[in-house]
Length: 408
View (tube, rainbow, N blue to C red):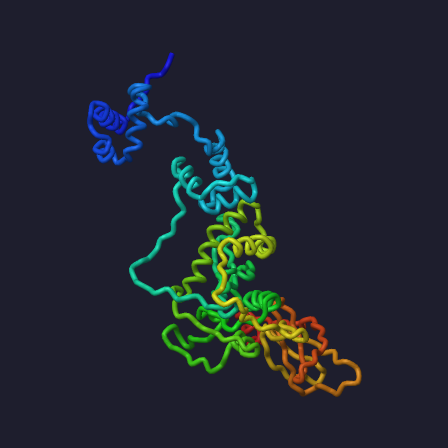
């Protein structure tokens, strides 16, 4: 039994105009009434003559489109999102489907399916109360780097909060290297820069916040500004390398770097949870070996000037002797020094002059090792001595002891 045709309101209106054209109205007036060409009016009149009223219905109505997606794909994609990719946004989920499951769908299709299934969007609050002007990107790769720590539950809400220290290029928007630590420290920043400098070279400038490991701005209270006459270890290291430091006075001033951190908090957290990464060392490996290269290809832009601004590092220069803390110590007569509550025995090489009473430089590298150098730069071997036994505390005299002394 043939199914009766279903006419929409537009079909009824079009049919009435075509009937009027069949009754004697000109094709030009009918075309103007329907917003069609006169040639299309002639075609509709011919179809209505041969097929009757159903001829006004488009021939493709009810047919499956040639470019339609396979049946069941929507349910498969929604199940994958619910079971494995619930933390992914629509764009990130579309990329993961193509890379890991060879399912290529547009971001808009994914977004439409997720909204129809009741999955809310992952939106962030945007504060538009104050108008700010966007700072143009630097023109060359390596002209300006962001270095910042982002505390977050990177390894999942059930794990303790950790900090991602990340270096990012301003001209290209490419992250360069990062590390996961318990908190943002001077040694962590030195380690990130060590890997960046070894791979790319020395940049022209660093854009930083006014954290304590970078610069000294407070002294004697929260409202007393100190002149930065005594540079920090970080400032000394960058001065020796010829890297300019630019300090921001607000997070909004470093908006491009803050947005990259926000994007990492969305995408990286979802990928670490999807791959079951719960260890900071494993997360650091995944970040630098897989996530950063893929993120750079996806979101990195070409610099306006293709000439790199990175300066090469000489092969004979050990960056660990620069990216470190430095302090002076005087060698005792027994060739020992005291440093941070511990004593170190100096082991000078043979045929060297006595170094007792001289000044040496003690360096703490970002891996925690302590190195001692002569004023001219030659390293001195050291051996950590066991801590000295503490004297026994004197017994406290009680009231009875005082009474016994008086009796004697």
